[in-house]
Length: 177
Ligand code: NI
Picture 1: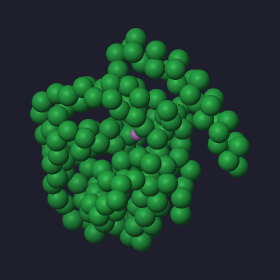
Picture 2 (picture 1 turned 90 degrees about the horizontal axis):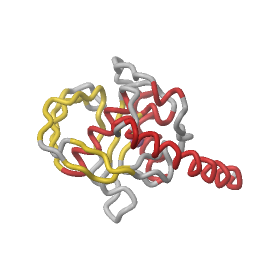
Picture 3 (picture 1 turned 90 degrees about the vertical axis):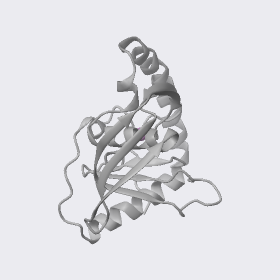
Picture 4 (picture 1 turned 120 degrees about the horizontal axis):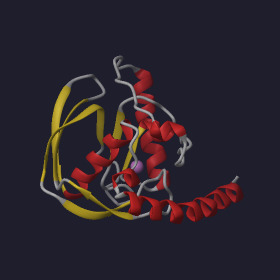
């Protein structure tokens, strides 16, 4: 089921998500819905907050929208950053801030510890876009969106631009309904 994406400044995007303790069918359903929603809306990562669910669940698929979509799905339950290294400034966007893209400084390498759908622990590492996705999505679980990572001035400018983008987006969504 495709779920509604919560749009900034929705309060749920500013809240800390809760640890998943029961690895049950409900969690699997949420993960399936999150993939369906992300593929429909064209992102490479999604955190549960973004569909209004305050649970520590992140999904990532760097091939979203491409030929091999779905072949390398990453599901991170209760993810935690273990190591960050290096630095990289790249443009970033978010399905919860439609149309806004800003350069954000992130670590170039990230190692993450998480649990899978069966509750088993594993570690995963990534560079570049994958490292960026880990950091961006785990931020969501802590109530942080990417513009919070900008300097106060850059954030103010981004918000001004976003106001207009949001109006256009809402108009477009209203026409669709
Ligand atoms: Ni995002």
